[in-house]
Image (cartoon, rainbow over all chains, first blue to last red):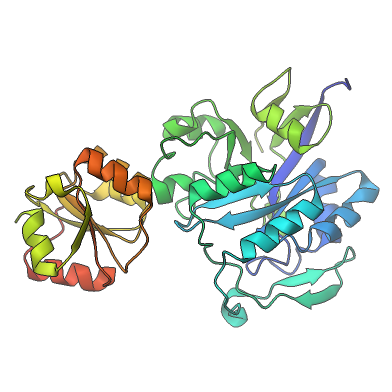
Length: 250
Length: 114
């Protein structure tokens, strides 16, 4: 087995495929910022889109930065859940499935912002005109169950935030739900989060920037893993065989 | 006023928790954020929401609420119905929206308790 390394990650980064992201969130600039922060892995998690994941992978690859394809899913109850997949093709099929659970509506671009698909250089390819930034028809448990079925990893996003979070919207971890981990925002420390939300108990916690602008990307989450795969992220969340997730001060 | 009286006054449908219909209502509370309900609703309140998640029943039970009105014909998960039945918490539904429902509740004398 390869030796364990301590690697900085930000698992919640938006690109210009998210209507609410700034136009600076294009692959080369995200990668430049990731290099400044010393990140070894970026989770790309647009709202119901994986359309820029490949471009970001291509932009990051020359610098040895891994990009984990993911998506920020909004459940029927308005809880945001990060869903990660090892494989881009799988993530794309996931996107197709998720889109069948979204209303057929146009993105109100003047109000929400445009959803751009770009290449690795950040050049414009096309605009997704479908409304993506809204709730799916799937409830929270369904999203967790489906992600699991698809071989992915689901983490409730920014659980400490007053909107679109597990605790704000649903009040508590639902009975019978077995979470592997959860994401906290930069607005709270690990200690504060565990004290404030008993539901987190001994769950593995990651802290992410939920970056809609470059400056919001962060490097406070460190994974002690032999390699950067989804399976190793799972093992780190479970603290198996010396693997762990450490949250450090910004 | 009892839950049963409110059901009759607003023509609500009782989809679970018949056994709790005689409970007295102390006041009303409306929100779709369960964290706000946990912080703001009072014992014996009638809770008006669009959420049909099983945590609605958990929160209603935790706070000893009189009943829950789920508005706009919003879907209620089967497990919510089952748990509401077990706990005797009436789940009431209406096709009308939250705004209209709360307005009617105010007309029959149910107000927010502070």
